[in-house]
Image 1: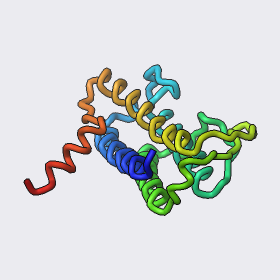
Image 2: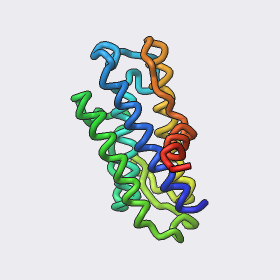
Image 3: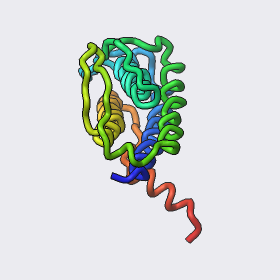
Length: 171
């Protein structure tokens, strides 16, 4: 895999997070915290899991080589508006990280400790791909929950970001 592919996925992660944030800011507090049958129960729980997973765990592991010991269902941010804003702001950190990454790292192993302290060595590129795929998975869960509750959820597919970018270029 080429580094450009990961930079694209980091841009997509920020784009999709921003689009999702726009609708989440309109969701009632009751719906935001209601158990929707998601793996982390509510939209609130799922967003906290994304903040924890993408940024507290994975970004720390990739950028600092530090693996925090923390439960995957921990609540990182109680305030819903601070939660969505923090998730969006931190999504841009991945773009900065990848812009400065040595492409040779993609072919190596990634060493880290799980949240329970187990030492792991896995392919670097595949693990980085996991981070972005994980966010897509959970955004999809929230999109389905929002739609089921009657909210108009925006298109979050990567192709829509690409179409937006293409349409902005002069023809």
